Image (cartoon, rainbow, N blue to C red; front, top):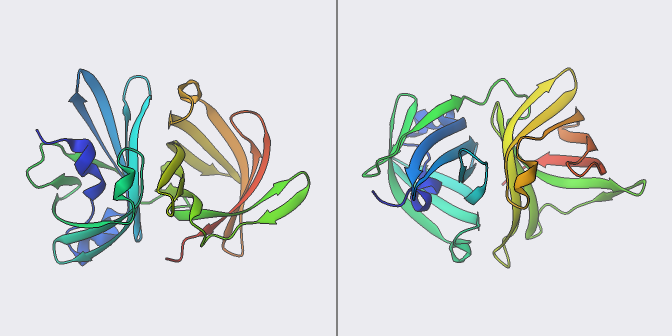
Length: 236
């Protein structure tokens, strides 16, 4: 079987008519090298992220993602980050994709990704960039067009944040899992965390609100450090 970690970033859409139906999260489980791996893919309009981690321990393996465009059944992906192969950052490749109902498959690859959600019910579905935060009582804005980015991609039930630099091609960290938005509370349940496996399984609850289109997010980090962040939807 061809290496699925190499090909997973290529899972996208097969027609413009199907593009909206693929927004959301997809998941596959496979055996490789004596381990059971889980692969998750989150699609938003124009952006995607694909990740592999150990299904039993949550140990992080790799992640990659970026932007995409479609012409017929040919998908062009432009890579923004790649933890395993950073030299791919900034490059584009074209691949043929097939979709059958609620299953995704790359041609000639013996692995199937099944739909987890369609972008609902979470009100925060989309690709967001950190655009500001409070530190020591003062608010600091962040230029989202700069190469150093912190992005959070959410489907209806799944989330992943990624810190990276498109100029240096450096991958800085990631984490993700399941989330809910209920009664002004945004709650994360961590499934993988690249820097510290001990955080896998943690449950974090934050206050959140949408103000003039931006996502305001406050509470305590997994290290119990107070935080107040502002996230803005990606426009490119």
